[in-house]
Image (cartoon, rainbow, N blue to C red):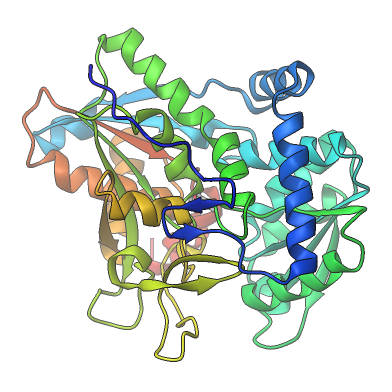
Length: 400
Ligand SMILES: *Cc1c(COP(=O)(O)O)cnc(C)c1O
């Protein structure tokens, strides 16, 4: 099989082509450069590698299986759909992969506290879990509005022992939580470390989070080759910030014949202002300390975004995805809220797997595509998380 050659990404300044980098004040650049140096040193050590791989196996439950969704494929009458079961990980999603990496890195760097923001609480729970395990205090900033909406996650974070800081400024949602967490972090960046929840933010975070998540694709590539002596024809994943997607894609980027598709939320439609299709409809800009496609107004302010899946409503996207789009190595397509809901119910009722609404976007795209492809083709979907968190919402929405 031919292998596509890729320059090592990112470059030393953290650029993926024109995207990424560090759009931050000089004092913060010093701090980020120090994290980068420490990361590059620590990640090469046998001790760190072994500890992380052992935890992936015994704590997260890796490798996650690949499941052939036979009944679903049969019903669609086309290509075979396979699911990479990140929903079976401890805590129920892929986020634990990079949270463990970040918490371990904090430990190896001798940091005294991990600080982060959370929107819907998914990153907060995964990080609080990892910090409890590693034994490092963890402080999570969350908008008051989100705290009221996301009760189960708030309760879990408290049980896990993290210090939850309610944020009441501004709209009291994710953006204000980011600002608040940042202020707290800058009080003592020597002793604290900021743990970003996706492949976004200033260098080195897009690289580090990708590296921790790339276990998904390395496993999947090997599992597919062992089972089929072939790679999948198509691989797909949903894209919010882009961590589960780049986690699956990385191992396959050099496999030229493998078609790679990232799925963005079209929300209520691309012709409305209620979507979050950043790569599809955004334009190059800056957000949260890095260069990427942004859904922005004429003054460069991020626009309000919407998705039925709260983990996907971000007006920016990871810089490597922006570059992979530009290189035309990865295609980015969209799925609406309605298609997502249909896929959520179909997967639940035909396979007995309740997916996260985020992951249901990738399932919906695969269902659409499978119908158009012959039966011997194989589509691999990253099932990034389970849908327990969304069950009540969907049941109410569909009046079940
Ligand atoms: C947070 C989340 C996402 C979106 O984040 P990415 O960084 O784009 O992967 C997707 N799926 C699940 C289950 C999530 O919790």
